[in-house]
Length: 49
Image 1 (cartoon, rainbow, N blue to C red):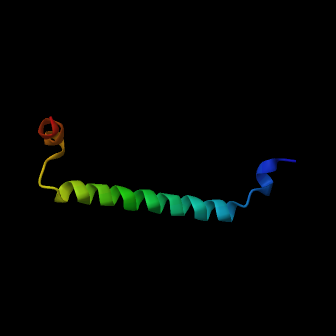
Image 2 (image 1 turned 45 degrees about the vertical axis):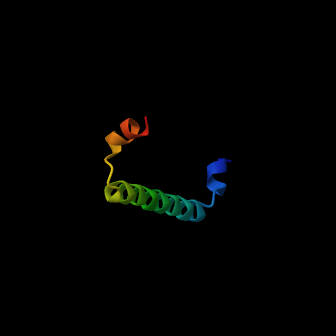
């Protein structure tokens, strides 16, 4: 018997969708945080030295 037949595909799909939403939210937060900062991203290493 194929073990893939016993996988709970509905639960796996819900888990995958939740993971994708978490990635989207984190990416959006990072983009907004970088966009709201006054210092450009490429000037940060020069300012830290």
